[in-house]
Length: 67
Image: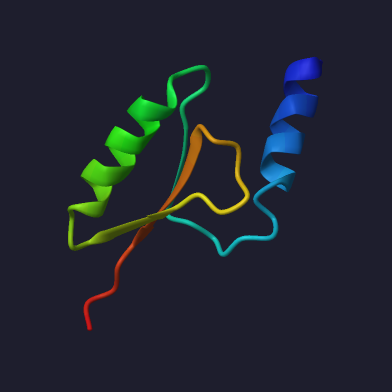
C-alpha cells in the first residue's frame, strides 16, 4: 500500500513542470553518476535535460525539436 502512496507523491512532484519525454530517477546512487548520465545525454543534439528543484537523483529529459 505504501508503494502506491509513494508513486502518487512522486508523480505529484512533477505537476509543476512541462510534460517531459522521460523522467529518469536513479534511486540511491552517487551524484557523480547522475552528473555523468546528464552530461552524456546533453551531448546529443536531440535531447535536453533539467533538474530544477527535483530530488538530486532525478532528471527530466526532453526531445529537442528541429528548428
